[in-house]
Image 1 (spheres, rainbow, N blue to C red):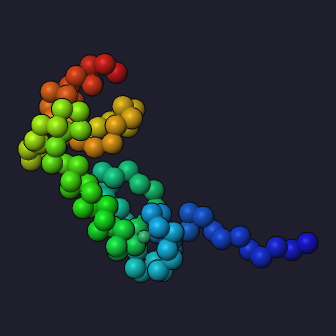
Image 2: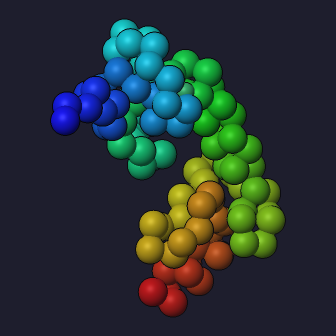
Length: 95
Ligand SMILES: [Zn+2]
Ligand SMILES: [Zn+2]
């Protein structure tokens, strides 16, 4: 029995955050540092950027204010966000 064609996942026309399909021209490539595969629609891109900017303000470990060059947590640490120099070095020495 033939089923209707399943919705493509990983489509180039789909926003990976909300699943919207506004069409390729209305999708934005996420910033490299977000480590996302795929595309974002404009509202999701804005939202992502906003929360990323929030994350950049403080160290996720000790909550210290971060400067101009926040260090992004490494993937292997299972932390999402940015760390101050001290916490980053501490984490780095543990792994
Ligand atoms: Zn979206
Ligand atoms: Zn810290």
